[in-house]
Length: 359
Image 1 (cartoon, rainbow, N blue to C red):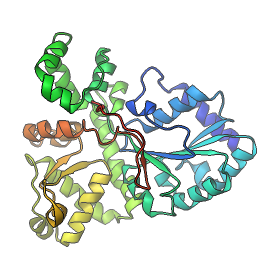
Image 2 (image 1 turned 45 degrees about the horizontal axis):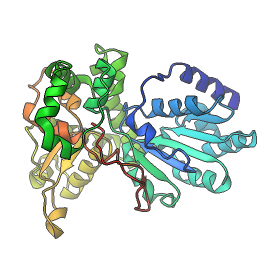
Image 3 (image 1 turned 90 degrees about the horizontal axis):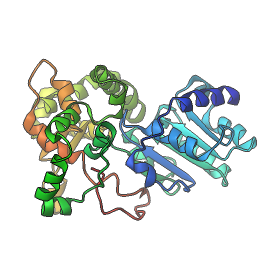
């Protein structure tokens, strides 16, 4: 069994790009006993893990990577595989897409408790923020979130321009000078339009002509694989989630009326809130709440956007024109500083944080 897994890992590692690493690579505390990296499909979690393996280990016998939904893994179980691997002298085990394994939380806890001198790394859906509610993993795991590419990272990949991140304070104070310097080195408007259409997910590097189909496939897998696996939503109700997403995509921007949505979709207001949370935790939308205090703060969001501009272009297609206003407002939201500010210890504390955004 392990030999088969080693062989798979060697093949995957041989096709892993090494020149470019996501910003999060340098911010992760790789010494932590148990750490998780969550994010939407296609943002580069698997590549990041294989790059870590290639940079720090000489063979799979030291660090084992495996996909939690592989037939060998499902057949033998996470705990049994980890036990056999560690018995042979293995040091680190990596579980990719762990949310696809039915009893992942309990087995992860058992591995952590049974092998105190070994390290566990895993990735999963953005929805795994519910990790803190399962199997008492909150005091064992450090969780990081990997978003899609920032515009800065896109420029590095496509134009070879490696600018340092700018803080929002720098942009507000020196935007004229900064914009002039950048515009003197490349055609910003052209590249920016390209980023809005196909620059958020790293798989654009595999071919722009296939980008739309690959993104659509990733979204479909979120609906029919990730969401049912994590949230236990019945397949029949996935259609309602799709309708809500379509409603948001076709609005400029979408200002939710919860009561009206409840009537139109024929479900309770409670389920509207739940489904909005599912879509956000799955990396498909972003909700914006009004700046208020107390009870007013916990009321309905004032605006809802798709998670990133690429999704607006995907869903508009030939049916309706892309919502330019929503795209413009959505762009700064997917360049935010929330994710790159260090790992989030699920107990509530934070690791030292960078003062600069990723984009």
